Length: 165
Image (cartoon, rainbow, N blue to C red; front, side):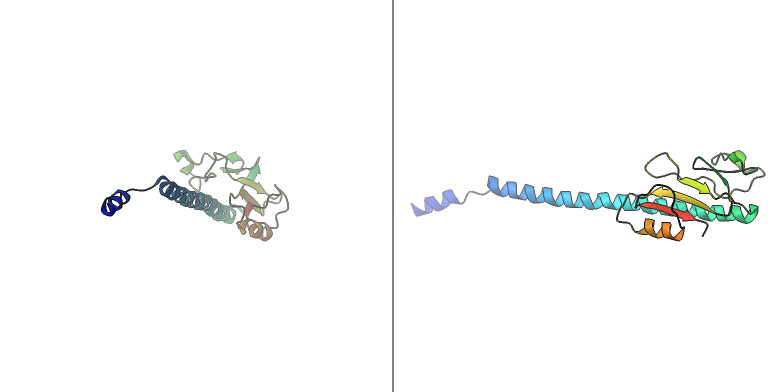
């Protein structure tokens, strides 16, 4: 009789409560991992933005070395082809005939089709290129605005700026 009772209690499998606990733990872990990956993507796009702006800065410095003036700004866009007053068709092979190529293609923001915002001083001896970073905890924006002495433009904490230095 005792043997029969022990045999009935030794049924193999999980109870409903045990399964619900395991599913809840897996859900919480998945949520934590997803949140971390989302932040990593934002930081990666911000890193690309900062790298793009530094590459533009280098191309503009080369332009300045050849022309003693930075390209003209028009509505946040850069005019730097031919006499410096025309909008460049950066992807065109026609551009290479007789014109020095400083950057084959101007990079665009990774999330949108909008390009970065470019402005030039009235004397033509300085410029700023700005973008908005996604990661609000990134301190590079404040450092860059301080380095470039930027007081104009959107008053947002996560605006990143490069200038002629």
